[in-house]
Amino acid sequence: MNTIGILARSGLQEAAPVIQGLVAWLLERGVRVCLDEASAARSVPGLSDSCLVASGRDLAGLCDALVVLGGDGTLLAASRLLDKPIPVLGVNFGSLGFLTEITLDDLYPALEGVLEGRYEHEERRLLRVVVHR
Image 1 (spheres, helix red, strand yellow):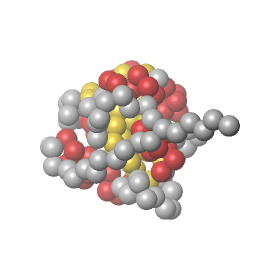
Image 2 (cartoon, one colour; image 1 turned 90 degrees about the horizontal axis):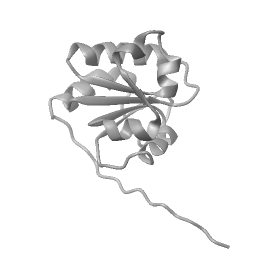
Image 3 (cartoon, helix red, strand yellow; image 1 turned 90 degrees about the vertical axis):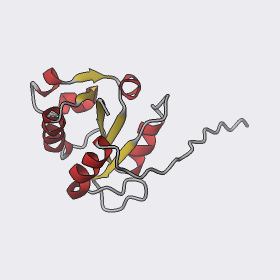
Image 4 (tube, one colour; image 1 turned 60 degrees about the horizontal axis):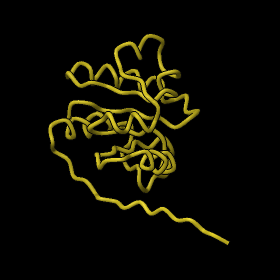
């Protein structure tokens, strides 16, 4: 994995210190980091100078994997941005997550496994439905 994207739920202020730590952790390991525009604006000033910053859809195309900070809704919204199959690591900031089962305490061990190629993944399908009346 050369490039990891970070996308946080809109308005999730608790994500700012997590993003800051995560960016530093990834850069120490020589991984290029991409932030979505909202997460970059919300994080520590100057942090985005060491990262690529892109819109959500562009971000998904630039990354080898995506870390999504939020809940199941954020993960589903992020999955709609993907044009290619990449691993998506859903980190739960709420109390109940069926899709985002990684907790903040498990974030770094899980991400270490992703960087080393040691991870289990579940393939999911995204259905798109249009109702005409």
